[in-house]
Image 1 (tube, rainbow, N blue to C red):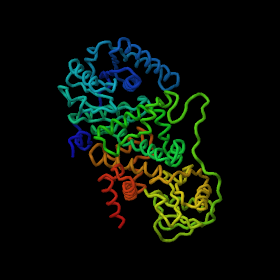
Image 2 (cartoon, rainbow, N blue to C red):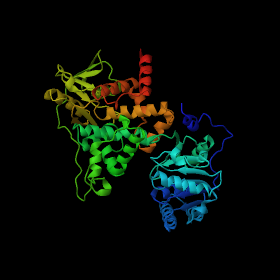
Image 3 (cartoon, rainbow, N blue to C red):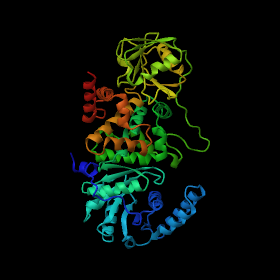
Amino acid sequence: MSANVTVRGSDDVTASEPTALAQDRTVAVVGTGTMGQGIAQVALVAGHPVRLYDNAPGRAAEAVAALTARLDRLVEKGRLDASAREAAVGRLHASEELAELADAALVVEAIVEHLPVKQQLFADLEKVVGDDTVLATNTSSLSVTAIAGGLRLPGRFVGLHFFNPAPLLPLVEVVSGFATDADVATRAYETMKGWGKTPVRCADTPGFIVNRVARPFYAEALRVYEEGAADPATIDAALRECGGFRMGPFELTDLIGQDVNEAVTRSVWESFYQDPKFTPSLAQRRLVESGRLGRKSGHGWFSYAEGAERPEPHTAPPAEAPEKIVVRGDLGPAEPLVGLFEEAGIKVRRKGGGGFLVLPGGGRLVLADGETSFEYHDDDIVYFDLALDYARASRIVLSTSEQTSAEVLAEAVGLFQALGKQVSVIGDVPGMIVARTVAMLADLAADAVDRGVATAEDVDTAMRLGVNYPAGPLEWAGKVGHERVRDLLMALHERYPTGRYAPSLATARRGYAEEGQDS
C-alpha cells in the first residue's frame, strides 16, 4: 500500500479535521482562460470573494468583464436573481499583481500545462500568501507531487481537477500528492461539496481517475479500425446504440481535438513507462501529423466543412427472421434476449449447453468472448456484441469469418431485425467492439482500485460524471460477470500476446473469487 492510500481515504477523517472553506474567505484563481474563468464563476456563485490574476497585463480585467457578462446571461435565463448577481459582481476583483492575492485562503491555478512554469508560479505564491493558504492545481496531465516538489510547505498543496465547462460539469477530482496533508485534502473535498460539485478522492497517479481509466474507450476503437474490422462511423454507432455511450470515440476525439486526445494518451503511456495497456495509436498520430485535428480544423475522422455529409454506419439489408431457435445453456449478460425473441414471436427451445444460440441452419450465435469465428473450422459461428441493455439497444453488431455461410449470417441478421434492431456486420475481430472496450475499462478500473488510486465507488462516479459513461466500469463488470471479463481478456491476450490484454491481478482476483462462489 502506498502512502497515498491513507491520504485520499475517507476512513481516516475525524470530526476534528477541517471542513469546507468558510464562505467569507477569499478564493484566488490564477489563469483567466476558459477553465480559470469557469472555476472563478463556481467559487463566486458559491458566495466567496474571488480574485482573478493573470500575468498578461489587462487579462484579469477582461476576465472580470467576461464573467460579469456570464452572470448577466444567467439572470436573463432565470438561473440567477438580480440581487445575487449584484452581490457576486461586488465580490469579484481583478488583480494585476501577484501580491494582491495575499489574503486568499485558497488559490487555484489554471495556467499552461508546463511543469517548470507551474512550479515557478507556486514558488512565487509561497512568498505572498500565508502558511495556512491551500494551494491547488487544476492540472489534468502533470504530477501533483512534482508541481509541489520544490515548495517549502508541500503538505498544503492539492490537485483540484475540474472538467470543462467547470460551471456545468459536476465532477472534481481531488488529488492528493505524495506529501499532501490529509486535512488539506479533506478541506478541499468538503469545499468542493460546498460549491455544489461531486468530488472524488484520488491519489497522484498518471491521468488520475478519468484520464487513466478512459484510455481503452479510444484505444480499442482505434485498434478495431486499424485492423480493418470496421469504419469509424460504424464503430461509433456500435458504442452509442449498442453500448449506450453518449458519443462514439471518433466523434468525441474530433470534438476534444485529436492533438489534445493523442497528447493525453501519450502522456499517460510515457508516465507508466510505456506500459502496453496504454500504447498510443499510430492511426491517430498520422491524423494529427496531417493537421486533421477535428472540429477546430474542419476535418478529423469526419469532415466538418459546410455541406459535408457524415458517413453512415454500415447497416445490413433486411433479412428474413428464422421461425425458431435453440438456446443452449445460460447466455449470461445476453440472457434478456431470450424473452425479447419470444415476444417477437420466435419459438425458443431451451437445452443444456455452453451458452449460445443455435440457428435453424445449424450455425451458432455466440456472445463475444475474445475468440474469433475463423478458429471454428467445422462450425458456422456468428459472434454478437455485448450491449448495455439489449431491450433498449437500437443496434446489434455481428462479426463473422469469410468461411461463415451466407445463409447462417442472413438468419442471424434477420433474428435481430425481428426485434426492431439495426444490424451492423463487422470483420472477424476478437472481442468485437463493445465487449473488448468494457472489459478493458473494467480491468483498468479494478487495477486502479487495488493500487489505492481511489475507491470503487469513486472510480465509477468519476467515469459516469466525468465522461458521461452509461455505467461505471466496475458496476458494468459486476453485471457482465468478473469471471467473464477475466476470461475475455485472457482470450484476447492469447491472440495479442503483447501484454496489452493480460488481465491485471485485480481482475484475475475478482474473476477467480466469482468463479469460486459459483462452484
